[in-house]
Image (tube, rainbow, N blue to C red; front, side, top):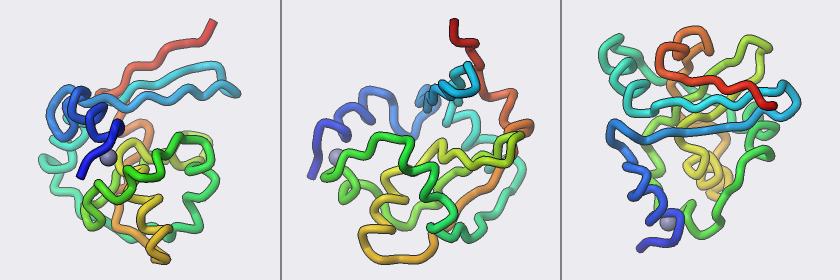
Length: 131
Ligand SMILES: [Zn+2]
């Protein structure tokens, strides 16, 4: 099964080196683009292990991203997501937003996640000031 979001993900190179997640922090005046492939390589190289993320803790973030309702059923439920903890303490899901939405829809309370800090992933991110 697939949808427009699947097609978009494929065009973006989902799961391969050039996949990028962008988010505009309008309130903070900048946009960040993370190279997901490079972050994934870092996770493997550093032998990071996933932890448990309680879904209630990520709800504020999920309200800020666009979720394609039908697409949540097209993503792998058990692949750990990637959460970046920003310097202000907020959490950003740079990979796996639809997996989070799916877990919520399935009534789960938690999901497996790799937790990284903003500083840690700075080498794999580009930041643009908004003008
Ligand atoms: Zn889809």
